[in-house]
Image 1 (tube, rainbow, N blue to C red):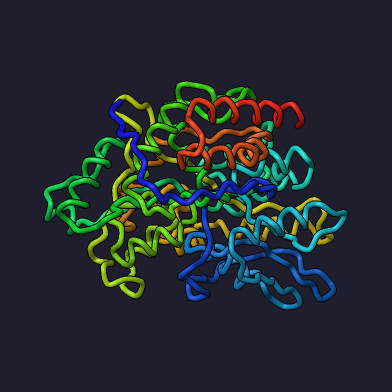
Image 2: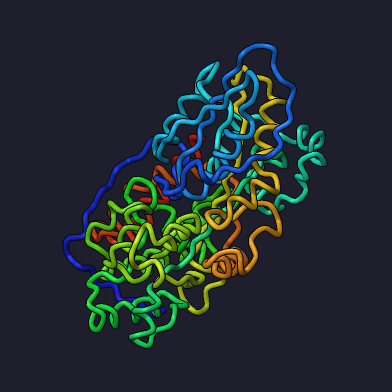
Length: 437
């Protein structure tokens, strides 16, 4: 592999130890509101008394259509669904809090594949198989993608109904690429070559934008790079941070840093979006749920210039793309005091055909056949990516291991710790974490 390993000075280091469970990189903030809600049938047995159903879901363009549809359609007679706007970090904090007591503050939770094994193994959320067997025909649940259902399962049981998936997509400035005779990069080396041309001839100092926030996104980026090589954080429960795949991922990511803003370890996905909106970056890799925002003229005068492609691979021989599959779904807390049958029918209605169609193009719904190549400007890229993304792991130790190694990872990527030393330290931390879980 051809990597340039020099580092530009001034990269901000934020080695922050995160203790929240299951942090991922889906980001926060939304540019879609209740206008995305559609009315669907939400047929459940009406409770006798006034009932409030509290829904916990973070705000993003990809999640809001499902949340809004559920709240709008399932609020009727003496039942009120309540959802308060919240960012992703707040959702993680509140999820941990609501699942930790004998009774919680929330009755329906938006969760994701990365978190399910840990909270399912702790008995914090309800297995849904019996409800699926009872209501599968009524809500056509067999049309939910099997791989996405698997991502939200643990030890053969389903713990969340998948609503939508996100995978990495490359967004780029087609006007800049066309003017300079460039094509979308297929490898990290291609990405660097394009960035050098854009910097020298296109006048953009930091052409590459990645979400590498030190408190969350950076570990997802690292895992995506490892996945491109065919490796993951854990293999049958065994940490893989001292592996060749880990080394290749770290070398590859460090090779990109000179072409990114020096404050990259403070950038989450909304900040990466902003780099594209204001023209300070020419290509970005983010979750697909962020792509529709780039196409809206109300967000940026450059909207018509954005194009989309599958993300690059680490190198030409890599078995997978530089991508992660993040599956979001609806779960029911074990400690809710409300009728779980009623709650299941609410979440089932929110992933139905009408709700799923209404989520496009902001989301990539779990229901098969909804996303076609002409359904959005980034649909072709998303479909190509999901087909070439390494399957997500399903290990309860994934979340605590990720939190344990993140501070060292930031030090490695910012050049404070040498790659080999960092790999060994992450391996040690991961082994200790696995042993203690």
